[in-house]
Length: 404
Image: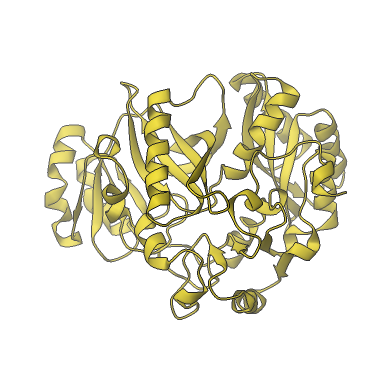
């Protein structure tokens, strides 16, 4: 079954964004770099989401995401799946590094910078200097309009305590962020200072050893990751994929996304953030882009992070239009991660039932090792009529035996 026969198609594919000579890779290095964790299993398990929206562009992906059983589940939900001859797979760090070297110079689309000694700058499609500045939290104000910039200051670690005093006196708390042109992943390198007396402890927990960003803590009812595709295939074209409401604990720890048609950024914020994306394109970045926006109590917005990469919400957002066309314009959707315990062999059939009932749409499967108590890990989109219905459906999945 080819992608053109799929019942549910994404609003954009990698082929809309990149030329077909590009080689796309969504995982960080196996080597520790920046403040990313160095557990290869964790990062392998986070790769492979793009297999349902390649459009034929070459993708580097872990072999464990290409399991026929997982592909069958995804296809049974009506989603496309990449042709194996356009996927370069690896099983370990050595095979992964060989694939990076195999890619032609200047063709690698890397969503996470790698250590310079592992990969020379000439391998990258986007110059590391551009990507590095976009992810450097000290450089945020250089990329966004002042009207959307939060109150923030960069200080040395030695001076951070004194520099933070105006924020702590005004709000009783603040947010600390690691700086540097190195990958941080989702929510890493960020600490919330919940009380003035906790500042030194929070600073000590903050990874890295260079200057830090001290940012005002805002009372924010909710936040969005606004997603864009900045296309090299259509010069000067910026595609707004939509906004994913973020499930965030303590304003720094990301837990997932919900897609609610009744809760979206205002047209003014969409216009301003789209303008920011256009400016980023004009300065040399093409590819997938996420911009994290806090919505304040007065409904104004503040950009708190730029993510020049595949984001946790990107693939799901690409499927929201097709799913709403199929299920109804007002349906709520949510990203969910489900583990299938090995001691519950009937869960594959249970998932097939949920797919037929059009309550669950898997888009990534990761097979677990034989030593793991789980057969596999599934990333899916769950559908419900309301937030209460989504919560009730989570309980139903738990009773079936799925682990989230």
